[in-house]
Every structure is written in C-alpha cells, then in structure tokens.
Amino acid sequence: MNLVFLSPHFPPHYTRFCQQARALGANVLGIGDEPWERLPEELQRALTEYYRVTDLHDYDALLRACGFFTHKWGRIHRLDSLNEYWLATEARLRDDFNIEGLRGTEIDMVRRKSRMKAGFRKAGAPVADGRVTHTLDEARAFIRKVGYPVVAKPDAGVGALDTFRLDNADDLERFWEAKPAADYFLEAFVHGTIVSFDGLADRRGEPVFCTAHVFSQGIMETVNEARDIDYYSMRELPPRLEALGRACLRAFPVRERFFHIEFFETGPGDYTALEVNLRPPGGFTTDMFNYAADIDVYRLWAQLLVHGEARLDYARKYHCAYASRRRGRSYAHTREALLERYGAHMCQLGQVPGVFSSALGDEGFIFRAPELETVRAITAAVQATL
Image 1: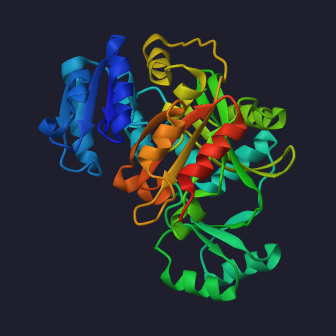
Image 2: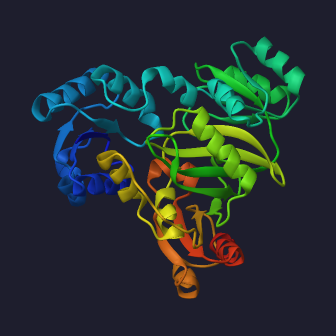
Image 3: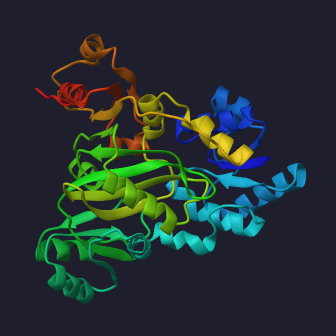
C-alpha cells in the first residue's frame, strides 16, 4: 500500500500514525515544507520517502509531488494529513489522482457550517437556527428573528479562528466593520455544556472505537478570553448522546476516518448539534483515547488503512482529562508539587506547540483516574491560582 501523508511533522505526535503504518508494511510517502534534516529521527525512519515543497499551499507543487510518487511507487492508495486545515486540499488531490476517501463533492458538507445543518437534520439531531449573511441588513434581519446573543463564525472556518459572540447591536456594528472578507455564518447562541462524540469509524462508517468528552467551555471563549481549558472523557456514554452520534456517522461521509462531533447539552439528555469534524479531536486527545482505555489508536488507524479492517475489544477504564495553564499566570502549585502529589495519575505533560496555545494553553497536563471526583480534584489543583 502507498500512503501519502501531508505535513507529517505537524503536529509532532502525529509521527505515530506514520510509524504504525510503516510497521504494518505501508510505503509512507511524506510531503512537507520542512527540510528533511529538521525532521525528527523517528519520523525520518517512519517515512519511505519524503518530498519537500516550499509551500504546502502551492497546489501545483503538491500535484508534482504526487505525480513523482505515482511514477516511482505506483498508484497512491490513501492520502491524508488527519488535520482539519488540509481537508479541502486532500479532497482535491484525491479527485485528481482517483484516491479512495473524502472527495471534493463531499467536502462542503463537513467544512461549511451552513451545510452541516442538513446533515444534522438528516440524523434527527436538533440544531440552532443559523444562516450565512452577506450584508449588515441581512444580519440584522436574522438577529431580529432569533435575538441576541448570536455567534458569528466563518462558514468554512477552522476551529474557533475568527469566531465571535455578539451580545448587542454595538457588537454587531463593530464586528461588521472589521470582519474578514469571507462568508460568515450567524447562529443563535445556545446555552449549555459542550460535549463531544469522538472516535474512529471503519470504511462502512461504523465506530471501531468511540468515546465522549465534556468541556469546561467552548474554544471560542477559551481563545477570545484567554481562559484555561479542561475537558475529560466519560466512562459511560449517555444513551441519547451515543444514539445521536451514531446517527450522525450515518448522515455524514464518515468512512475510514476519525470523527469529532460537538453538541451542546442543554439539559439532562437534551442535545443540540454544533459541528461535525472528520478528523481526530484537537490537541492531544488521541493520546487521551489511549490512556482512557489502554489501547493504541495510532495502530488501530493504521490497521484500518493497511488491512481494510480493524477490530478492537476495549473498555473505558478511566476518565482521562486534559487541563491547561498559561504563561504569565500565577498558579498555586508548581509542576513539581503536582507531580509529587498526583504522580500516580499523571500520564503526560509538556509544552503545547505555539499554534495551538491560544486554544490549549502553553502547558498541558493529561491525567486519569477511575473516579470522576479524582479527575476533578486534580483539574482544580492544576488550575488553582494565587
């Protein structure tokens, strides 16, 4: 099998996907903008060959890279980056080289907030009212219908980048004067707790592994207000959340892909669909999958691609949590003190790559425990300030 992996060096822990695919016999063919000598040694060993381009946004350069690999290694069987930023680029390359996977005709459904609504409705999931507004008058008309607050987000945005909460007419005026030159989607604000249905689906769209997470707040608030964020995995999935999540897998083109489907829990058992993302959840959540169930999701993904199927018997043994801290904030407990007290629960800690720091903080702690009370106590200790 020939697997082309775009930008294999970023984020750094995605090297493990390349390692596992290579270990199972795939030719892992990397395309990136980083010089070969700067790639980590473990990634160099995982790649069968590497083609450097000056700019990954240069589509002609990507065409030449894939053409080179096709000439040398034969047909490209899979192409991916597992990164939301490159979803549209991947789909275009799959179209041009007839590669199995998410195609250009499907990309708007999972990239444009306005198109996601139809998929959620097909799945039977409640959604907030929303629409693309091209003029200030259109925006005002929509807000007269739903009332303030509303959320303004790029229709084809990535994560919470350039996303804003508008609480009144002055907010709307200021936003409209400064907004980027892109289609913006306005949506009625939903009060609730953000939860997600996450995992990896096989080529039929059935989950090989699934779990759910509860978030302290949305990424929009985290980024715009520079808050600390924390989230944890559930050991038992609420039946209604799982049912809606599985219905969404059938409604969207989730084949041989990770998924991260976000909902607002507005009351016990009541969920409003927010977004669907056909990539691994952000940050280090793939590592959290592993810690929560003592599995290797990197190998599971590789088995699915290389062998066409993957089977996994698993139990969610732990609640696994992530808690962030920000540079320049005075915290009550040092890293050393936290390790001394909670070392038995700590799984991973370290610096967050700069591009993710606005959403995930500058330093992240990952820890686990069978009891939710323990996870909450550690989160409180990590984020306690003086």
